[in-house]
Amino acid sequence: MIRNDHSIEGKAILVAEGDESSYREINSILLASGYKNILWARDGGQLLEILRGFYSQLGELGLIILNHKLPNCEVQNICQSINRFDENSRIPVIITLESKADLELPIIPSECKNNAIELISKPINKSEMDSLVHLCLLLKRERDIRREHEESLIDELSERKVMEARLKYLISHDELTGLANHRSLEKSLELSIHHCRNFNRCGALLYLDLDNFNVINDIEGHETGDRLLVSVVKQIRKELDKNQHIARIGADEFCILLEGVNQKQAMDLAELLRIRVDEQHFVTGDKSYHVSASVGIAMLERSEAISRPSEIISHAHQACYVAKSQGRNKIHLFDKRDTATHKLRDDVHWVPVIREALSLNRFVLYFQPIVRLSDGEVSHYEVLLRMKGEGGTLIGPDQFIPVAERMGLIHNLDMWVIENAIDFLAGLPETDSKTSLAINLSTYAFQDVAILPLIKQKLETTWVSASRLTFEITETAAINNFDKTRELVARIRALGCHFALDDFGAGFSSFNYVKNFPVDYLKIDGQFIQNLVSDETDQVLVKAMIDIAKNLGKKTIAEYVENIETAALLKDFGIDYIQGYLLGKPSSEILESGSHQIKEMINQIPGTEPLFVD
Ligand code: C2E
Ligand code: CA
Ligand code: CA
Image (cartoon, rainbow, N blue to C red; front, top):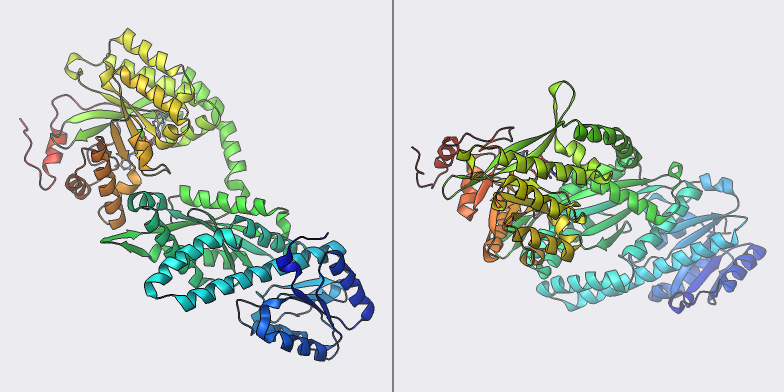
């Protein structure tokens, strides 16, 4: 195949081969691929002489193809002397072996392991040689570009400018050189897969995703976000070998390719990187943010039968997802059983159980108070679903709601909850006529047009006032099909119902969405609240969320309030409502009207004017 890439075709290729017919064979493969600048060294002496000629212009020599039995030559010495060249500009080497059996020989000195030294055995396979040559030349070009960039950086810049230039460098680098972007990662992975399959030299891919980057980026702006990325990358790089390939493949997602490591080494490095990121405190202005990362690990092993780069990237990504869902700031090794098999077994088991629970009325509603701080009144109760299991046990929604979503049963659950929650209100005595409820709706609720008529009809037949209902929807639900969802929300609001944006801050949306989305309450995600007292980053974020909500004219609710100290901080930040174990766990009954238990609790928050308790 002739390649139309002059920047690599033009480079010299040095073939060091004692046997003339072997040289001719290699030469004809190279010529057929369009390479013209081919040099021949018959022994070690000629090789050194040619190399010396290139000392001052390392960029011009693209590749050495070296027979490991070249007369008058120690292959190991050649590798070592190339290793001593400028580390950014090292010349790749393809070593030709006389037979497959030679693959077992310890040919590459350990300090040169990461220098792009490739092995190929005779008889030479044309297409294997062709693709190795191409990949090596690409690598050489990338190294040269990187060296040029770094040289100009070092020359040019003072302390502050270095930062800006590094930023530009980082951004252009992704696109310009192909070194650190997705495509380049795939190329390197191709080579690794080749190594793994043919030479049993395997490795691992780490997928590192920053936790909460979006929130910081939103609050502080993109420039600060970029600076944060640069400083994280700097930390990561410190721990990596110069030749361990790191690529930025998303806004805050990085892949790190490790060659020649076993599972333990890969996991150790992943854990080290996690710790390094976790140790960082990113300071901007007078604020300091704590950053953390979740890391997924996928092994590249012969037994894995991985044939495409995208497969291993996807495995590492899935592992990272598991790490995130286990609470973030964690590492996780990819395991086939994690996702596909586990889920499937679970789903198959759950479907009939959910159907039966619906038909036999085995679901129950629990209620958890949400309290207005200004007067200590229960503003409303969040409705939380439970399923009755064997022998009176209760099953939590985390067990069956995700399955119901995947298996298309969630509409039935959403409908069941709406109907039963309204019935519950209708059945309350006159003294509770002000009690209101917040109902969770699934991400998919608005894909069903039946939801609006159901709410309308149910409110009409029960005479329950629409103002006693709030619907909690998540950011994902709001963003999916933004316009349609917004319209449906507006129509349900027109009936008199309220809306809350649940799990706020946990997802990916920006404050822009909130601005344009008709909700009355923002419910700050519990993960920001649970450790509020000890985590300064959470404090900064929560305060910013409250301020922004205020500016947008929306009320704020904090969930997962578990102690007085948290409540006091939130009050200080200006939160409107709190919910959590401090005030009451979810229960099958609402509080008795006239009960003062909550007001007494609110009275204990420092700085509270004593509320009236009779
Ligand atoms: P969510 O809407 O974020 O609900 C809050 C969860 O936090 C509830 O868990 C609640 O029991 C728990 N919680 C409240 N206060 C505290 C606290 O102080 N500390 C701690 N550690 N946890 C607290 P639950 O009931 O297990 O619900 C889990 C999720 O299941 C809910 O998250 C919601 O997404 C979903 N869900 C619950 N009921 C329904 C429902 O009726 N329909 C739909 N579609 N989803 C529901
Ligand atoms: Ca909720
Ligand atoms: Ca929530």
